[in-house]
Length: 209
Image (tube, rainbow, N blue to C red):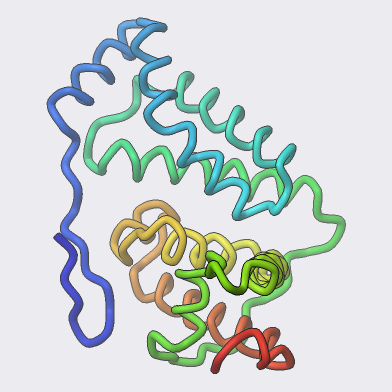
């Protein structure tokens, strides 16, 4: 169960279930049925994550397919030091970053100066973009504007925001996925929150700050 300390989410490291371990071991022996079972378990999560990162259905589908292909080719190297979900999200994130590097025609912009922010209204907006019954149109507009704002973030910030706020990953899990120190994860998340707040501030009628 998650605990909250000093306004920050802390989550116990998830263990790989005995059933999932057995499936993974079958995959390592070349059992395609077992691999298909893993795909069925995680394909929605991976696709949704990829869509949040790209904002494009086709790109998300390509990233999800490439991620599972990499998993299939690398399953023998999975040692269980982290959960399978963490390992899978690391691969998916790497696919996204690799694709962005190939598509980018100029060097990656440097990250903004670090600014410490608390779990502010921006966090709440990210976590809950679903429309209310009496404001369906406005709710959809808010969700699209927020998605567009997230898309405008640098890739690493975008990934951290998506992992934390839409995939509900803890700092420790994100650090494992991104292969970065927890301090770097917190820094990038705080920079992303500040950037989003600045981007959304002209739309105060839709977003409360």
